[in-house]
Length: 255
Length: 226
Image (cartoon, rainbow over all chains, first blue to last red; front, side, top):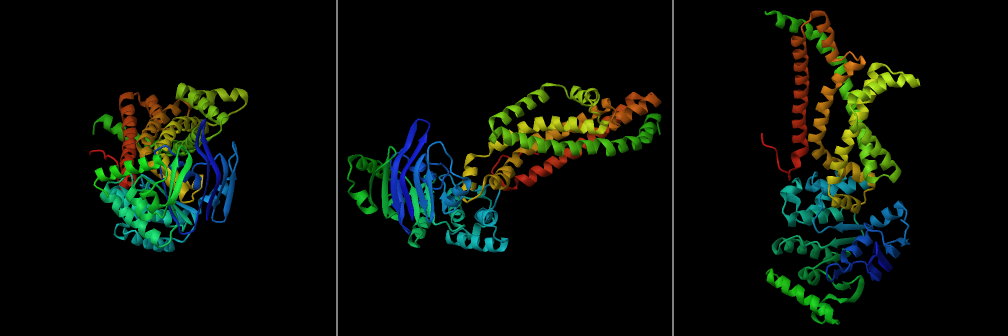
C-alpha cells in the first residue's frame, strides 16, 4: 500500500531522514512517535511530497516515484502521488475565506471538477461523519480548535485519498478538545481508513494506532504493535521517551 | 446669484465633461493595466528566475526614484526624437500604467507573502496545482489585506492624472486652466476643479469601505472603528 525504500531527506548539510525503509498495509493505522526533531513531520511531508526526498523511492497505491539528489521529479508525477494522500495539519490550516462546507468542497470542485451539487452532498456526508453538519455554513474563525480540526479531517477525506496523513493532529488542542478529534480518528480507523500519524499524544497513539514506529535522529529505531511498544519498549531510550509522554499527559489530566 | 457662483455654474459642464472623457478613463484604464503589470512583477519577485527578478527590481527602482512628471515628459516629448511619437492620451496612459505597476508590485508582493505558507500546503495537500492554489486560496486572502493600500494608490492616481495637463491631455485640470485663460478667475476655477477631484476621491473611498466589508465577512481580523 505504502512502500518507502531508502528514503533520505537532506536540508542543506542536515540529513533529516537517514534512509527510511517501511511499508504500511491497506487499512492499517500507524503512529510515528519519537522526540522532536527526530524526523516525524518530515517523513509525513515526504509521503505527500510537500517535501521532495533527496534519495530513495516511494510508492503510494499504484503510483511509484524515485528521487535523486539535485533533481525535482516531474510535477505531474508529484501530483499523481499526492492525490493518493490526504493531510491533516497540526494547526488545521482551514481556508479562512471559505465556510466549513466550502472547505470540504474545495478539492472536489477545483481539482476533481465535480458539479457543485454533487460536491455539496459529499461534503455534507463527511461533515456529518465528523459531527460538524450543524456548523456547515460557519466561518472557520468562529469554530473552536477541535471543530476546525474535524472540518480539516473532512476536507482531507473528501477526494477519497487512499491514505490519510496526520501531522500532530491534536497537539494544538487542549485535552478536552483533542478528545473529540481522537474520537473521530478512532472511528475512521475502525472503518478501515489507512492512516499514518505523527503524534506526541499518547492517548491518540495508544487508542487509535495498531502499529507504532519510533523515529529518532532520522532513523527507525523501534517498531511494533502499539500494545507491546508502550508496555515493553525494547530500547532504554524509547522507554525514557514514553515515560516523558506519560508524565506529560498525566500533568495535563489525561491518562 | 453672485458672480463667482455664476462662473462656477457655467463652467461646471465643460469641467465635468473633461473629467468624464479624460480623467476617469485615464484613471481606470491605467489602474487596471497597472495592476496587471504589478501582479506579474510581484509574482516574478516571489517565484521567478533570478534574471527576471533583477529586471523587475531595476524597473521598480527607476520608476519609484524619478518624478512622475519627468516620466511623462520623457514619454511624450522625449521619445519622438528616437522616432516614437505617441498621442497625448496614449503617452499619459503608458506613463501612469508604468507608474502604477511599479508601486502596486510592491504592495502585491507584500500581501501575497503575508498569506501563511500553510495555506499553500493545505491547497497542495488536497491536490491543487500552483496556479489553482494561487487563484483559489492565496489571491482571495491577499485581496483582503490589499484593499486599503491599493485604494491609496488608486486615489493618488486620480489626482496624479492632473499632471497629464502638462503633456496636453485636455483632462479636468487642463479644462480649468483653459477657462482661467479667458476669464482671469483662477481662484474660483481652481477651487472648483479641486472640489470635483474631492468628489471623485470620496466616491472611491466609499467604494473602498464597501470592498473591505465584502472581503471582511469571514472574520478573524481586527475591524476598523467607525
